[in-house]
Every structure is written in C-alpha cells, then in structure tokens.
Image (tube, rainbow, N blue to C red; front, side, top):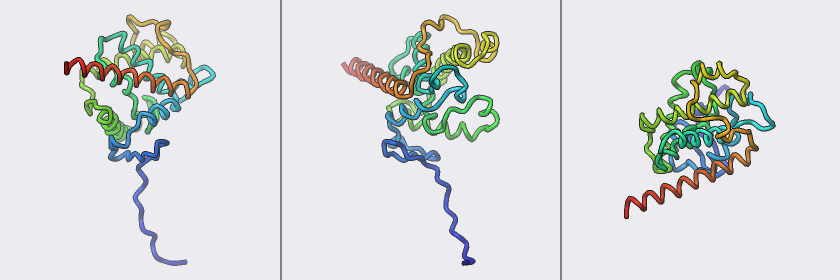
Length: 211
C-alpha cells in the first residue's frame, strides 16, 4: 500500500435539483432558485415529522398555502406581501422542516443557512432579501394560527395544549381552512398555481402604479 496521504477534499455543500440547478447551501445564488424545485420539494417535506393523521403527510407546501390563506384573512396584504407569506418556509425545500424543539438544540447554525436561502429565494422573485419586521410579525401570527389548527386537527394536541404553545386563534375557524392532507402531487400543483396567481396580481399592481 502506498504511504502517500490522500488529498483532502472539501465536503459537498450543494444539492442538485430536478430542474438541473445546483444550489450551494453556503452561498446560494438566486439564479439557482426555481419555483418548480421549491414546489416539488415542499410538497414532499412532512410537517410535524410526519406525526399527523390521514392517508397522506401534511406537507410544508400545504402549510404554506394555509398560512397565506390565514394571512389574507387577517390582513389586507399587497401581492408582494402575500407572496412573502406563501414563501415564508421556502428554505425548507432544501433543509427540510426541523421541528421547533430540535431547532433549539441545534442553535444558530441552522438559522444562518435558513436566512441565506430565504434571501436567495426572495431576490429570485423580486422581493426584499429580508422580510420587513412588521410584515414578519404578521406572517408569524398567521403561522402560529396555522400551527394551532394543524396541531388540534392533525397532530393529536388538545385545544388547551395547542393554545398554550401557539396561542388562541381569533377570527379564524377550522371550517374556513383547507387543512385535510392531500397527495404530494396535488400539494405541488396547488402551491405552483397559487404562486402564479399572485405573480399575475403583482404584475397587475405594477401596471397600475406605472399608469
């Protein structure tokens, strides 16, 4: 056997997407972000680590649709704001949905990667790299409302337990929400369709401003 040491190679920090893009997790470029990859990935990532009732996993794509629906109920958001609500968990198409207890264990490294990916996604679609603070709070409110209904309807939480962790929803009831788990291909399609609808609204709003 040769005594020569093997040359060290840097660990791979990129993921190849089905679109053919190669996304670098350490330095993600907006040019490597594709909506088709986001919709495909989020539709196949399970919320609650898959610990939900039903024949299908409740995907992050469905969660994003739910949050955007609740956001529109709670706010008179612009198309740009609705798009940021829809894309609020977009980084998870790369890094998966890490439950809150595990995020607390992992610490800041996860957040750093998540913020870089969020910035790349936002810039790809003509949004601010970072969600403005007040808007972020509004989206977080919708996110917590969604979590309450997911927890009680799908993840086995009691009403009291969910209210303790996520707060008591106001002005929103379960019958207003599309929460039944659906197949991944349907979640992918609905996510992409909602994205396209918002993009049309954004284009219309821009034409109005320019008129």
